[in-house]
Structure formats: structure tokens, C-alpha cells
Length: 286
Image 1 (cartoon, one colour):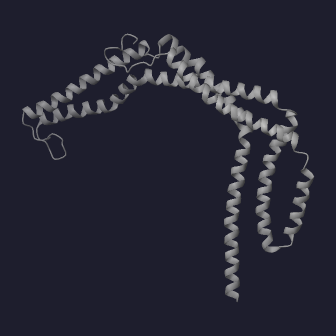
Image 2: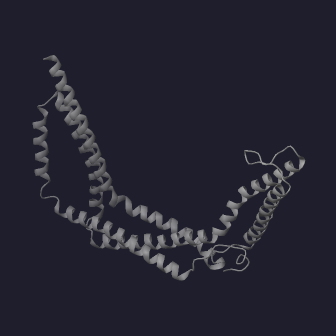
Image 3: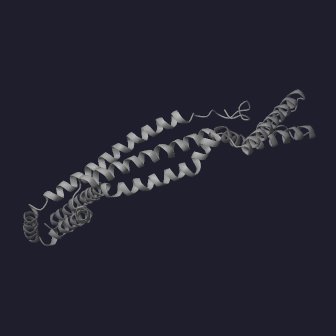
């Protein structure tokens, strides 16, 4: 009997743990969903300010003055680096060809034999060339892609500033035109988010409390039922506000994606995508 009772207690605790985890996940998910209409407008506003400032301060100048191309300093750096890479590439190739022509033995690790001074000199030239190439080829590659990276960054800031800006305008107009008693209803909505979390975690506490005191359940049911009855008839104005609040958030999100696509199209029509930089186009703007 004692073993059976202990087994029942373990099963009860296991079920309570599983139920506790499920309720906690549901409460957290519900709070996150409820917080979306509250958090999204300020987040969109901050995102608009960040993207618009980035476009106005940096990207717009690069677009109009440089057309996203390299500056004169960057052009000189690219030409010098490109010439140096060609030089060391040829130096490495010439050293390898000389080793073959002079019959210098290659070790199993791929390096030239160091038994002769000539082999050491040629291997030193190869090592020097490879070190320079490994270090600087990625830099040259970044130079070649830099105009396109500037173009993509400017497109992102331009289109997102339009998207977030239009979304905030849609939310502001729809919400403040259609919502009533904004201060009180907004405060009540925020309070209800906290109330949701408090009620959810109180329910978890009540579940564990029933293990010790099962009689409390009936009292709580009556209290909850009474509270629900008292709240009836008070929700109609608030429900209208809630509908407007949710619709405003939905229209804001839809407006963002529509305006974002429009911004991308406008940017592509206004600013041509630059080519990769190479020896033939680096001097002149493409």
C-alpha cells in the first residue's frame, strides 16, 4: 500500500510539472502576442529614424556624388594593390617554373628541397608571394565589390525608411481617427497584459496548492465566476477600442511591406546598380 501511494504521488507530481510547463508556455506566448500592438509602433518609429538618418547622412551623398563608385583615393589604392598582386603572382609562377627547369627536387610536403641555395631562394620567393597574395587578394575582392555593397546598403536604408515611415503614418491616422477614450483604454490594455501574466502564474500556484488543500478550488471558482459576472456589460467600449488597436497594427504591418516593395522599385529605377570594379573601369565612373 505504501509503495502504491508513493507511486500515485509521483504520477501526480509528474502530471502537475507537465501541466505547469504547458501553462507557462501558453502564458508567455499570450503575453508576447498581446504586447505586439504596444511594442510595434515605437519599434517602427525608431527603425524609421535610424534608416532615414543613415540615408540622409551617408548614403545620399554616396549616391549623388559618387554613384556608389570608388573615391579617388580608393581608385589609387585599388590600382596599386592590383599591380602588386599581379607582380607577386608572376613572381611565384616564375619561381615555380625555374624550379622545374633547373630540376630542383620537390619534397613530399610540396616544398622545394633546401639542400641547395638555389632551392632555398626559389622557395623563399614562393613563400613571400603566397603570403602577400593570401593577405591581399581578399582586400582586392572587397574593393571590387565595394560599390555594389554601398548600393545595397543605400537601397536597404532608402526602402526601409519609406516602409517604416509609411507604416507609422497609416497606424497614426487609423488609430487616432477611429479610437475613442485613448488614454484610459490604452492604459487598460497595458494593464491587461500584466493581468494575463499574473492570472496565468496564479493558476499554476493554485494547481500546486490543490495538492495540499483541495477545498480552495470551489472558493476560487466562485470568486472567478462572480468577477466574470461583474465584468459583463463593461466591455463593449473597450472591445471597440481593442478592435481598432488590432486593426491599426495589422494595417501598419501591411503598409510597411507594400511601401518597402515600392521603395525598392523606386530606388532601382533612380539609381543603377554598379558593376564590379576591374582594371578597365576603375579609372572612370561606370
